[in-house]
Every structure is written in C-alpha cells, then in structure tokens.
Length: 193
Image 1 (cartoon, one colour):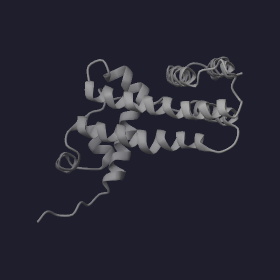
Image 2 (cartoon, rainbow, N blue to C red; image 1 turned 90 degrees about the vertical axis):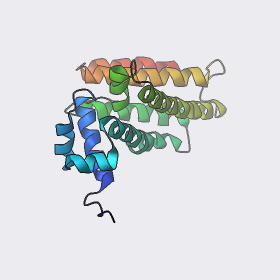
Image 3 (tube, rainbow, N blue to C red; image 1 turned 30 degrees about the horizontal axis):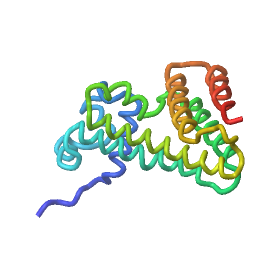
C-alpha cells in the first residue's frame, strides 16, 4: 500500500508555474523546481513525471485557471465593445503592474519552445485559439447589437486582437515604457470604432 501524499499537488503545480513563468522552461533547473515546490526528487517524479511533463501540467493550469478566468470576464451581458476595451486595458495594466514583467507564459513559451517542441506548440496553439474564439464571440455579439459596422469581420478582428494583445505583452516584457504600450493599444483598439 502506498503512503498518502504529504503535499498538495495543486499547490505544487502553482509553485512550479511561478518558476517557469519567471525563468522560462530552459533556464529552470530541477533544483529550482524542487526548492520552489518544497519536494524531494522522488516525490516530484512520482507525482508529475519529468520536467517536461510537469511543464505541460503547468501550461494546462495557466490556460485554465489564469487565462480562462480572465477571459470569462468577457461573458458579461450588455454592450460588448466597452467590455472588450475594459478587458484589454485590464490585461495591459496587469502586465505593466507586474514588477518582474514576466509577460505571458503562453507568449514566452511560444518564443522559446514552439519551433522545436511540437506537443507544447500544439497546446499553446489551442490556448491562442481559445483567446481568439472568445474575442470572436464578443465581437459577433457586438455586431448583432449594432456596435460594429457591417464591413467589420468579427473573426478577422478577433485574430488581430489576439495578435495585438500578445505583441503588447511582449513589449511589456521587453521593458517598453508604459506610454509606448498604452499608445500601441489605443491605436489598435481604434480599429473597433
């Protein structure tokens, strides 16, 4: 009979997420993870597998608990475009307020691993598609409610906003000034007028 785990696996994945988000996949060592998660090597391997398997769990958690929770804010009833603008401004303000300027775990990982890690790239592609689909639903609702002109294509706008949001998060991570980031966002959002 195996002994019960003496740690909470969800808490351990959360701690691992913070390390990967801050350092990136390649720069994160097993020692970094063991220290942050307060686990011994055997417990980590028995519960999560290797570093790569743990990272896939981290990405899943990030997409579900962090990104999914934020994007659920777009499901509010009422005028869609003001909700969308508030959401994007909130995401940017959150990124600018992060003293570590970690950026987005998805964007960071796409740039680091997607060219040579097919499974991880596929997972990240699904996360970006989820963001695009959520933007599309809001924009389709905006069009139905008369907030967008007939010539505006909700799917094309959704792709554009997904790309713009990821790009501005990369700007934040690279140290761009808050004014430059905000000006970029305002220029991009003018497409909704």
